[in-house]
Image (cartoon, rainbow, N blue to C red; front, side, top):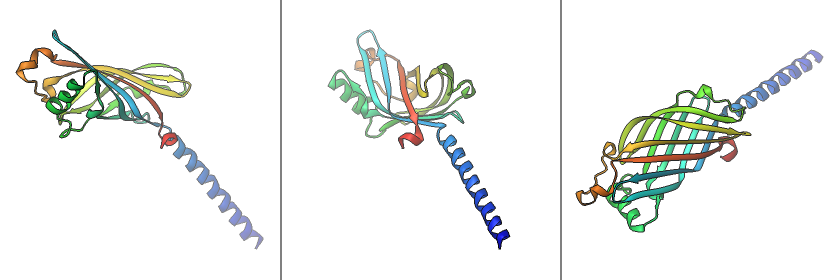
Length: 197
């Protein structure tokens, strides 16, 4: 009888121990994923006749620092222009945002091992993945920065995209007003996925 009680106690203790270990491991896995729903994406196009600039502060992004996977989803209609007419033309004539409502990026930070989340600093990173705009997907490679500041994680990057790569048609009458390439800038402040979800 006493032996059975001791054995039951051992089994219960072992079970609790394994549950605690499992919970610690699960917490660590969750903490390796970061996200945002308010990432900032801007683009600039400068041609001789007109400068085009738009800003979007509703980009969604998830970054897994264990695997290096990083993804973005950006609503096209959330881009804000200085001129309302320019915004209307952008959505209706060029980006066809009713048909192609969002742009996405799915890729990998190829040197994720260079980042130490426990140490403050700016880390240069290389990113490679598929950028989809206007229904067209192209593989891109660019560099960026991951900034660690007392547990807070942010990221920024800047790269160029060619308008013709994404089959965005520019009417001949305004072709001189729009540059052939667009400068895209990204700035994101992440938070732990398990804290924000």
